[in-house]
Amino acid sequence: MDKNKKASIEIELDASGMQKQLEELKDILSNFEFTSFEGGADHFFGLLLSNLSTMCDDIILSNGSFATMTDGSLKFIQCLNFGLKFELLTSALRADKSNLDIFDILTHT
Image (cartoon, rainbow, N blue to C red; front, side, top):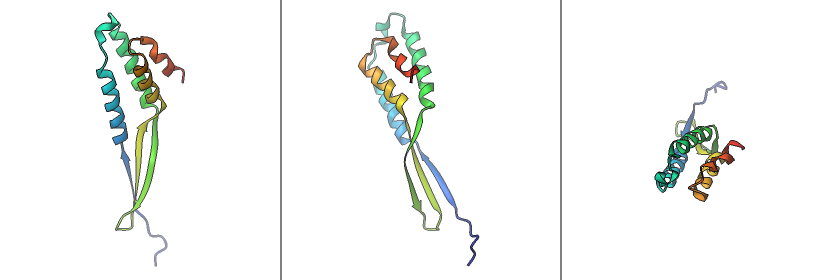
């Protein structure tokens, strides 16, 4: 028996959770009436884009699982989700759709 036998390991990243979160954000934003900002839409979108960038720095790994394949190799599946920054952003958007300062909370965490 060869004690130096190499094992194959496959790593898979599952971003379906992030896709669901982005759909949720899209649904929230679709409820906005940007004409009510009286010219503040550019400022709003600037803040939103800045916070989307911040959100991308806050990706969490969750629900990792191993599976042994029929050929003896290992497969590791790691789920990805946006973290606290996403939750703060969506909560702020739901709470106060007209206040452009809702994003201040994101810059202080």
